[in-house]
Each structure stands twice: as structure tokens, then as C-alpha cells.
Length: 119
Image (cartoon, rainbow, N blue to C red):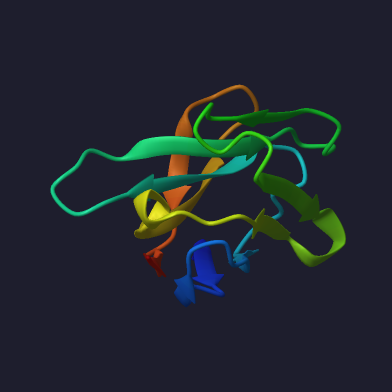
């Protein structure tokens, strides 16, 4: 059974930092892209960042570019999201996702971890 489990969320003041982790199990994910999305209350899910299978290519939403860094450790089947200079508008549930097959859509999702940034 494939599972993605996020951790590291919490409450932080504006300007602070958090590091999210997503550990996958049930299969290897070293051959697919992984990434992070977020969903704020009463808003649609939006892309945050993604990373290629090797980790050599990363992509970011404009709203987080320069503040967030995505990375992965394939030996641990884990992807990370380092978030710095957090803003109240970053408040959301952050979800980890992974492609089901190389080049395919994100088809595996975690349950999410809440990030709340106070002003």
C-alpha cells in the first residue's frame, strides 16, 4: 500500500521558518517527480514546488520563489520543503504529491500538514 506522510507543519510567526518532510512507503519513488501543493481555506489547491527524480531540476510557484527550497533524499524516499521568510498568506494545508509513473500526473497524495503563519 502506497503512503505519503507529511510532517513538520505548525504555527510560526511571520518571518519565521519551517521544514516540511514527506516520507513515502509502499514502493520506490526515486524514478518519479515529487512535489508540494497547498490549499488554503476556501481556496483551490495550488502548486508550490516540484523536484525531478534525480533532484537536478526544481520548479517553484512565483509566490514562493526565493523563500522556499525543495529537496529530496531518494535513499530515504523523502522529499523536503524548507520554508523561510514565511508570510501570513502562506497559511494552508501543505500536501505532498508524487507521479504514479515517470512523466505522468501526480497521482499519489498525502493527507497534508497544516502550516499557520501569524502576523
